[in-house]
Length: 155
Image (spheres, rainbow, N blue to C red):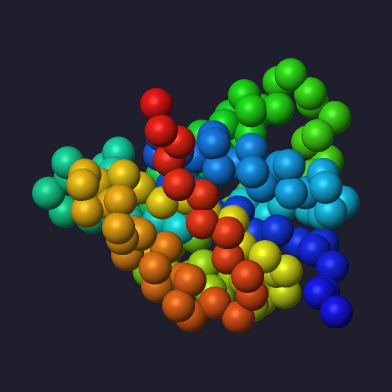
């Protein structure tokens, strides 16, 4: 018997594919009457918006940066749900975690007892037609729950 899907872990990096992948997570949550837990993993405090820093931000700056990213996630969810705000009840948690993405995603899936992971993959040229991104590949290899990998749509 296939287990029921009640908890969906949706991982995002807020890239161009994020909204497309979130729509899959939202649709799955509605079909299965499940909740979505959103996780953004900040890789050792060197996310894309801050990669121009020569050094990592000071320890006392980290809470503000984490809060900025959390706000971006909140805004992202609000934008995506503006046409149907009643769907917001599907989003149970939004978290920003610092660490190694693969390790933190797998750890979070275990901690929350996720039934399924939904994540996107990046388009990085011709090779991406054959291979998934390294985070998606490693999560897929090591996950104890089903992983839905959503590619960037053509066009």
